[in-house]
Image (cartoon, rainbow, N blue to C red; front, side, top):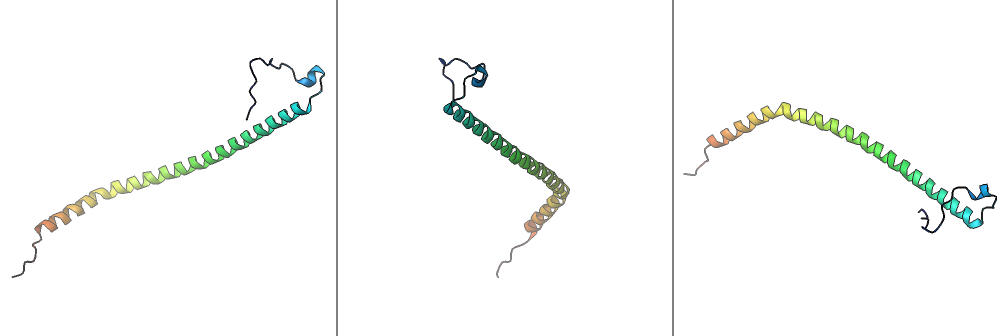
Length: 100
C-alpha cells in the first residue's frame, strides 16, 4: 500500500518540481502508484458506505416488523393462554376407553 519513509530519509517539505529538479521516472511512477492506491481506497470506502446504508435500511425495516409481531403476540397471548388451559383441562378430564 503506502511506502513508509525510513528514519534516515529527510522529510520532504517541498515538491521536487518546486526546487527546480525534474521529477524522475521512478518518482513519477511512485506518485502515480500512490494516486492509484488512494483512488482504490476511496472507491472501497464508498462501496462500504453504500453497503452499510443498505444494511441500516434493512435493520430499520426488521425492527419495525419485529415491533409489529411483538404487538400481535401481546394481543393474542391471553387468548392462547385460555385455549391452552381449556385444552389441558379437557385432556385431564377425558376418560380413556378401556376394553371390557
